[in-house]
Image 1 (cartoon, rainbow, N blue to C red):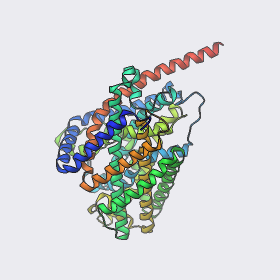
Image 2 (cartoon, helix red, strand yellow):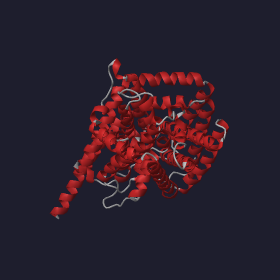
Image 3 (cartoon, rainbow, N blue to C red):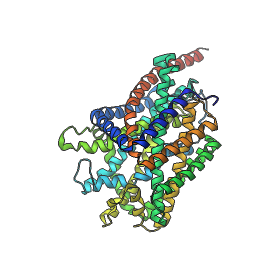
Image 4 (cartoon, rainbow, N blue to C red):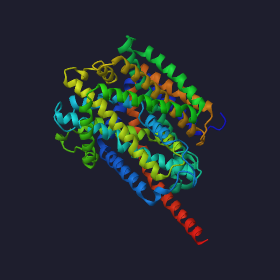
Length: 502
């Protein structure tokens, strides 16, 4: 194909080889990747915790520094998307299906099955479950996404470089980034994106299938999931064909509206006062204990280190593996904003929305559990729908949730095809539709094959292992960004001084 880089062919070959190995030897594949994941979590847990906390410090420091007034674009350039649309795009690309999948289930699990530090089933565990949900989905992730996206947006829109991960390292390595080393970094980013999104598509298909089965008795299994992924693939390919300013923009706005409607309904017909009280107290606890939980490594046997490995370390590695995809997408939709506007928005808006979401759904699921309905007996994808059964308007809530999952599903896949297209076409801001279609079909095919052989867990393990080398790339990106921002600011000051003299 014309205007397609070697990153496309190398990554596509690696994806095919990995999927074939996973399909032919599923047990061995899961065993090998599971061992790697456990080793990474146990050995490098402290490193992930330090890295994510350091990125929070970096994001805050840059936003309040004089560099904050630098624009991600030319001087005087206006933001490409309005604040509500930009917020919707952040929300959709960064969280999507996972928020619906885990919104009711994760705080409930921390409360009733395995509390981080307190006695399982206690009132303290109920509150702690919400605090750790905010922690796992809040400021740390958005600081990491924000710094990655900032580096990409700065070099792309301010310096006129291609929208590639390798480009952000040019201040350190110069033209070497145009050779094999740069290709290796971009291949790693594309590989992580394909499998990260494919796994999410698998989760989405499973939850839509579970919801339809719960409501209408549709059989749970590969046949139903094949049909769901096929329909969604057709829809997101149509959206991808229409481009960023139409397809993803409208889908993201739809997601935000549907999310707010579902959230408000549950808030109103659920235990409203309890939700409001729990959010107020637990969000305060999150802020108050922010530093302590950020650096908690549980080094002693009595500290429940296995919980930390299964949840926090897993999440940090998982989110880092998503950084190329989400970072590139956020960068692409943030053109025209100043660095201060950008980082302030990325750190605060999604964190607040997500915390409210967990407070509403987590408090409601915990309250229903306390009243005698055993929600913990259900698989993660069924907790939400069985929770709705205990509320008024249960059918409407479940249908709305299924539509929302489907909409998030389409948006995530659509966003990913756009980012994969950029990465495969030398960083082009308008990748050819045929490239996007190839990647769209590849993602859906990977998700289907993994569902068929039961390989979603193995791929999750693979992505978490791949996050380790990419985390070193992120550190280099930060160093390169500091160097480039310092030079840019000096240049701006010199120009301003020149203007004043003239």
